[in-house]
Amino acid sequence: MTTFRTILITGASSGIGRQTALHMNAAGYRVIGTVRHDADGAALVADAAQPDMLIPVRCDVTDEHDVHALAARVGDITGGALDAMFSNAGIANMQGDVTAEGCPVATLDRMMQVNYLGAVRAIQAHLPLLRAARGTLVINSALMARTVMPFNGGYAASKAALEAWADQLRREIAPHGVRVSCIRAAAIATPLEAKQDSSSVPEGGPYPEQHAFVEGGLVMMRKEADKAKVQPERVAELVQKVVEKRRPPLKPIVGGMARPIWLIGGLPLRAQDAAMKRVMRRMTRAGS
Image 1 (cartoon, helix red, strand yellow):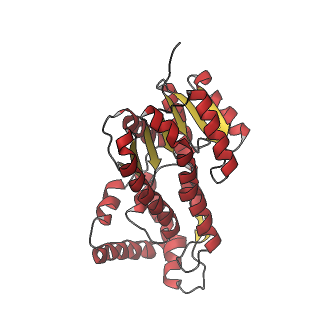
Image 2 (spheres, helix red, strand yellow):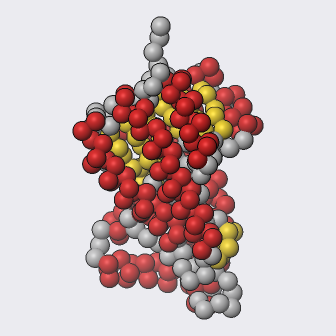
């Protein structure tokens, strides 16, 4: 009987997750990809190079029942040993007030529920399977976990929390042969990025000088970011490299503007503030 290496990918309906599922499938992996809707799963299989080796499963990572049902299904498919998992499901603050003062707590809670607790829930459920295979866990984090940009603190907080938990897990599970890596992505051309156009700073609020930055200056920032953005395929290729290395990088970076954003995050805090202030001043002038 032929044995395939199997990878579980959460959030495979679109963007990075979808591209990674198709990429790993084409590379010869049996892929189990979670989707929110049956139509997304059907479309994923239709685009697969090896349709019989791509298995879509409906799952919401914030739903305990869904996640445990997924783990049972994955266990049945793999015989109790999962070679790799790419924890990718996530959301951003895609609409409404994005200031630290004005962003609704309900919005912050939703990002934490999906990006942090949802990821933890899904990973915990599959750790026994990864341990049995001495497999690899890859987590889709973000450079925001290291370098917090203005108007993105909620998203950054959810990713920073996830990375802190991942650091703990990596050190605890290493004796069992399970490798844990966090991919820190910057500007990637995905639907999640595109939806952020509806974010705003309310006009007439306590931050009038920043309204121009967000409402107009972000147009310039997005144009510059679009030049630097890389396609999700770059992330998919990195996931494969991490999965196949015996000693994978712990926190590799990828994406447009990744290097400068990473470097800013390594500066002393006041130097980081000064760098961000210069960026905001430039964007505000462009948006005025």
